[in-house]
Length: 207
Image (spheres, rainbow, N blue to C red):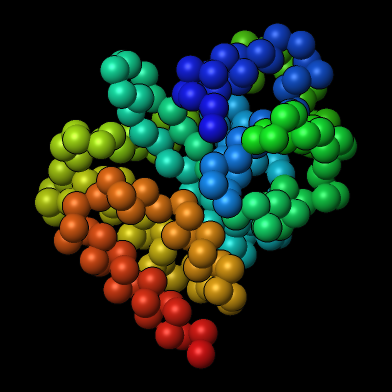
């Protein structure tokens, strides 16, 4: 698994316009994760608009976390390896290139009307503006920032994601994708129990 330092360096290599549409997917166990610019591409362009409205926006909920021993943060989206064609749909793919054993680079087609007169600086601003939409969660050992209700703003977003009316899982794979996106190991026990109860209800609804 690449380190955050390695990932930042790879994601910075966007000076050439041929790299603007490339998603770097890093293997993490049985999942793929896309970070920073690549996460933005996954979320905004790699799936059809119709499909995103149904499920993908909920399943590809970005995780924005503080980087330990750094003043910065990193954002990523993740999904099961077996679902790659679901989250990065084939009709958006231009090329598919394995890079070693733990990384895949996928070039996707970007909408021409949105890329006219684009520069590297403008795209970097777009990625950073998108990243700022998602609250930074505390890292391991840190104290989450509480909201007025007493829970971290990140947990509120996660709870909204998995219990909100717009999304109802149709398959067990949908629930597994949600679990993959949740940083369960970093949340407080009472918050984890709330999430577990919702996931349990979703599982029960499938049978």
